[in-house]
Each structure stands twice: as structure tokens, then as C-alpha cells.
Length: 275
Image (cartoon, rainbow, N blue to C red; front, side, top):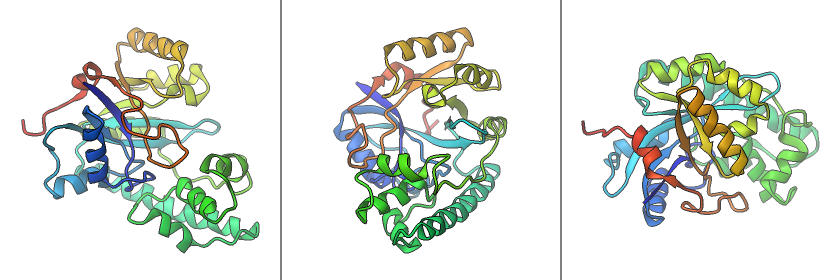
């Protein structure tokens, strides 16, 4: 059996709703999964409130993926086994989500000033019931309107940091995120460290209270994986991995089960919700 500890639902910027992603994971033969939506736990809450978490036939680890503030680099921190109803966590997430909505409006305004025919309604039709509006939703709307061939092309030309439609937004500091995850009973893990593009910064982050490293990731080659496994060993940290599945056409991996890790890594994280 195999596992995947990094995936997104429609509650942030994934294509599938929480029930569909659980069904897809079961169909792929996954034993453990973690739902790690951006800055929201609504996906896990929906499953719990529908009586689908805990689930039969698959072990679900409640998670989240935070975007951390940094002047030059993209830093993401995963939180596993968080208390999804922790008041301090939910209060802080409300602040982050409110800032996302403000940023979303500002980006659309910039695009309109650049003479793109796009509205907030166009983006919301893509986002549907997501409470965590992201640049990915905007990019999907731009692709739908025919302005770009892919979400990646849209990001590279206008939405990435330094591009004409980029708008910075409120993000928590890495230390704040690490503390918030721990205070809600969770385990903070540094996501896809290669994408930070600075291993000196990666090691600095690992010394701030991080408890795990996402060493296994689709964009890590064998040398990258070995390097991050060595870091995890050196700092006595847990090892995780996942596909970062979104379900968006053209974005790899295309299907759950295309990138997996051994169950042993997930089993070390898993806590039985019935205990």
C-alpha cells in the first residue's frame, strides 16, 4: 500500500471537493492521505460534519498548508494532526482568508487596468465554494477566457512575484505559523524545500521549531531527496512526502496515485481520531 500526504480540494485551489478526493484516493489504492488546503481546514470540517471523517477504508490525516512571509522566497509550511476547531487557529485563519479576498480584488483591478476583460464574478465562478481565493483561481479564469494556454503560462507572464499583476498579501511569519500549528496540537513540516531555492534558508527554517521535512516531492530529483533526507536525519526530524495534487488539467500529477510514498512515513504521523 502507498500514501500521499499533500493534496488540495476545492476548498482552496483544487478541482475536487473533499468527498471526491477521498473517493479518488480510495480508487488509487492509497492507504493514508492528508488533505492540506491552503490556509483553510474547511475540507476536513466538511468531511467531519458529513460523517465522512474518520472514513472507512482509508486513513485521513487532517492538515493545512500555510504560506509564510519572506521578502524574496516562497515558503510553505504544512501542519499535520491539527485540531480543526481550535479557536486560536480558526481566528488566525479568518484573518488570512480576509486578506486573500482583499488581494483577489486588487489583482482583478490590476488586470482590468491592463485591459483584460475579467471580473470578480468570472473568478468566483471558477472558485465556487472555495473560501481561500488564490492566484490559481484567477489564472484558471484567464485560461478559460483564452488569454493564456495554461495556468503556468499565466503565472509566468503576469501573476508571479515581480510580474505586472502581482499583488503582495498578508502572510504570517514562519515562527508564527510553527507556533500556531503546535498550539493546535499539530506537527509543522517544511513543504517542498527545493522550491525555496535556498538551502541555507531551508536550514535556518529547520532550526526554528520545524518537526519534519517534505523530502519526497514530484519536483525533487533523487539528489534533492537524498539531500533533504540527510537534513532530516541531521536535525532529527520526521520525513514526509506528497504529490501536491490539485486535479487541474495540465498540472502534474494528473491523478492521485501518480506520486506516492511508502506507508511507513504516513504511519509515523497518523493519529487514530477514535482514540
